[in-house]
Length: 330
Image (cartoon, rainbow, N blue to C red; front, side, top):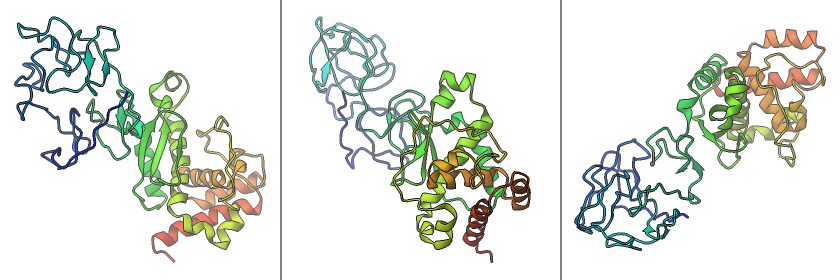
């Protein structure tokens, strides 16, 4: 159950002035640790361990879970003591009421779980709700994007973009549950399936080279969406086709993103996956171009050995010339 409060101008971080929600543990912008004391004298009680506002009637602190029972504590679980709201009963069946986003039941001390439906995504560290703009998880204080879990892949991809002379378009990488991809409405947000990093699949199957290849592929989608007007040019259309056509590519289609050599099959494409849709064709072309550091002479030599068609040469020339034009080269 989600009971997300609307941010008010009064609830702002004292350091960076970002709007906050009450009972967040950390500022999502600067990462400052927050404390919610009884500044308005609502309950006249604060936890002796964490300093947050509590009720005199409670037996446990709903924020840190410590035992705070004393002579003022209620003998029976209450629904909504003074200073707090009732959002639902304790999920462990003790009968007491809890308020979003209490981490523990103030009556039995057991951990509580909530649905974070009003948030855009979930934190890869604690599985609680976060939004795409957040740098820090407001619940656990860790990196809300999960980029701290893939530093090697991010550094390598960044170096390859620099060596390939591709200008930074201020993209943002985030680990999310589900399928990797880039949404056209948010071209700078690149989502990677966090199972590759945090799940069993990462430990058993996925290498850092494969993760870098996946990242470069999704960067290709982001680059294309960010420069969408370019797709209207005649040269782009002749090389890649109509990228606006309906997208019907199966999500479970397997792709070897670790592969750095051009596939021998399909004369006009660099890989089998590139043939599924013009957008995937561009993303795969972008991946090979960046992974090979923009060295067209080396790439064209390989094209010749593998008897690639003229259209493949044109795709890389179109991308190469556009990258040069973005840097003001002639």
